[in-house]
Image (cartoon, rainbow, N blue to C red; front, side, top):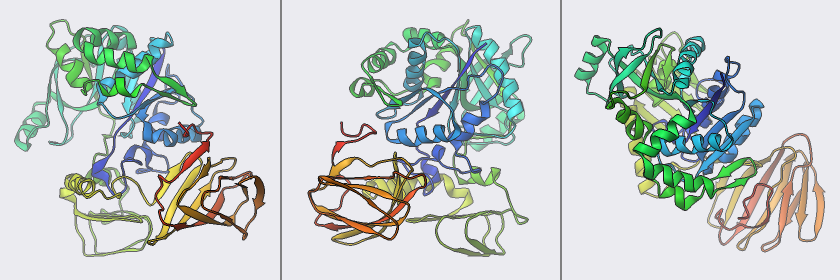
Length: 478
């Protein structure tokens, strides 16, 4: 039996701001250990019996280079990295994945996993996957229901129906929305309800069959988007107009709930007790974090006195905390969050406000990742900007030109190959060069170690959209 990992990496993680940003969301961050949540998801199934080593990823177009780089770091091949121009919820995303595998004549069982979950008991998850694969081969759509350990109001629930013989799986009686606290207590006491994990197992042919009968419009738009898409280096870019014309719907609403209403609907749930978390907010991150003797989760340059049951994370500066209890402090280069731990679900209100104010702190960090490396803003004035630039070994920026700014480059470490107009030359450590306004130029790292530079921009306009690209190995000249 062949199982294909399908990873849904389209979330934005707004409740984990300021760590998570729209262009650098939580699944691409190392929130629990040294690996990112996406990498943990990939590694979790690596080596499981019957599970393919290669993965299929559905992600937002804006995250494509980060996703590809994180897979490269694991040396994990991808059948496809499917790019959504904009999220349309999980049903269209899964339809694209099913179409991609069907196009390869591959009807392997899909193991569909969000990229931002934590599962500590991998053996228990492996046992559930084994059962799920057997049912999926029988044309069931299988989901995993997390066995609740508390009356949680932040998750949707699944009510178990009749047991499926010879397995620990059940038919699904019904899906229910996030309950209030009293209802959640009743669900927990009954033993009939499981948390809805958002993980599934099914064959591509099964999904496409149900989409054709239950959601023909979504299927039609996704088929058009996939058919009229194009390969772009490591990525498959679906047709934007066709995909955005698809209705937005979740897997549960689009198909699963409708299957439970059918007498012979093949929808099953497998109870999963595997120390699972969706890391939805900072209280969940605190729950699974490694704590000191006073119940604190502390990372970075933090000094605390008489603080208890709190989370304190410092990325850039010293954080000193005195006498705190049940408090969250998150410090980054450009923003600081201080919140009562019981109120962290409201962090989304901050993100909404930043969006309304047209501020960039909800979009990007001060350090911005590019396919060639990264840059970080250090200082900015009315007519100048200073950046720290890191170019990966063997990487190159596009051949480009600016209409409104000149640039001074100072090499701190490594070696730079610079193209300036018709000349190409080497700039070594402690050397510098100058790029006049309107001059075609390119920066490359021909060495085997990262190239670190300081760039000083000066001019009448310093925005990132003042770039005219002529050649680019990452396909960004389109």
